[in-house]
Length: 112
Image 1 (cartoon, rainbow, N blue to C red):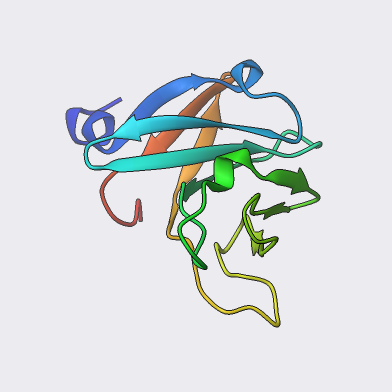
Image 2: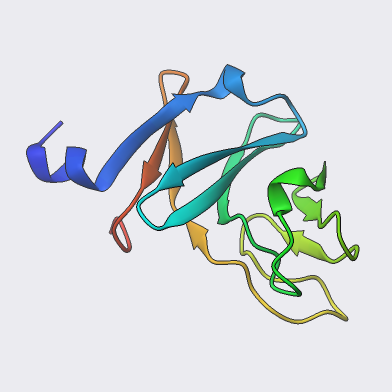
């Protein structure tokens, strides 16, 4: 891995550290990021803040490719970060990938 690539992508743990249909939080400079694992082992990364009132999405219920906020029941799409209609808003998402069972989180903009 090149030096520039290794600076942009950060290893934040193994896929087995997140239960299926569960989440865990990682701290990156100035942000709390929720990592979600679906039943088919897809991984998503969103800021750990519901777009409604800032509730902790990481403590919500994961179902399909969505998470329901534990505070007021808003549902957020994990792939886009968008609230599901009729609700409106967006939880910022970060690019994430799997490499050899390790979760790599992209920390600086669009990975291209």
